[in-house]
Image 1 (cartoon, rainbow, N blue to C red):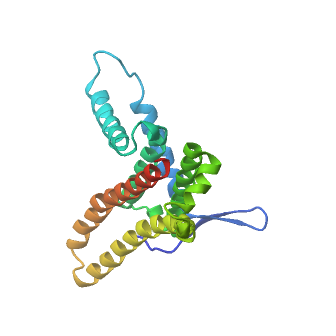
Image 2: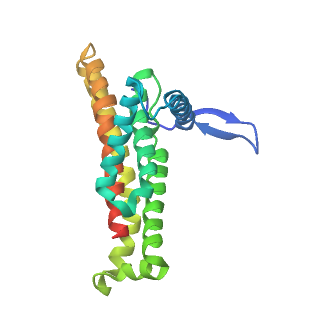
Length: 220
C-alpha cells in the first residue's frame, strides 16, 4: 500500500507554483473512469426486451436507490443522487489501491472535503425543510439549555465523518505494514485484497449511511 503522506504529483507553473496533490490526480482518474463507464453502460437502454447488461445495471442502481429511499423516505429522495455518487466514489477510491494507485481517502484533505460537503448538505436540508427561522429555532430544542450542545454538534459531525473514514484507512495501512514485516510473503497480498475491497466498501457504506441518518434527522 502507498504512503499516507500527501505527495505532490506535479506543480502548475502559475503564481510561483501551485502544487497538485497525488490524491487530486487519482480522483481525476476515478472521475474519468466513472464517466466513461456511465457513458458505455448508459447506451442503448430499452424499455422492453432489455438485455442482461441493462438488467444488472438496473438491479444495482435500483438496489442503491431503494436502500437510501428506505432511510430518507419521500421527503428526502432528492438527496439520493448525491449519496449514491459519494458512495460509489468512496468505494472506487478505496479499491483503486489494487491497481497500484494511492487511494485518495488516505489523504485527510479528501476525507475532510467529503465530510464538509455532506455537512453542508445536511444543514441545507434542514433550512429547506423548516425555513431559516425554524432551522435556527431547532438549535434550542428540546429545551433552550441544549443550545450550546446543538451548535457544537454542527462542528462535531463533519469531524466525526472525516476522522472515521480517514482513521479506518490509516488503521488498515498500519496493520498491513506490520504484517509485511512479520510475514512478508503471500499473506500481505491476501490481506491487502481484503482491506482494499471488503473493508473499503464497508467504509463507503458507513459514510453514506451516517450522512443519510443525519439528513433524516435534519428534515424531521
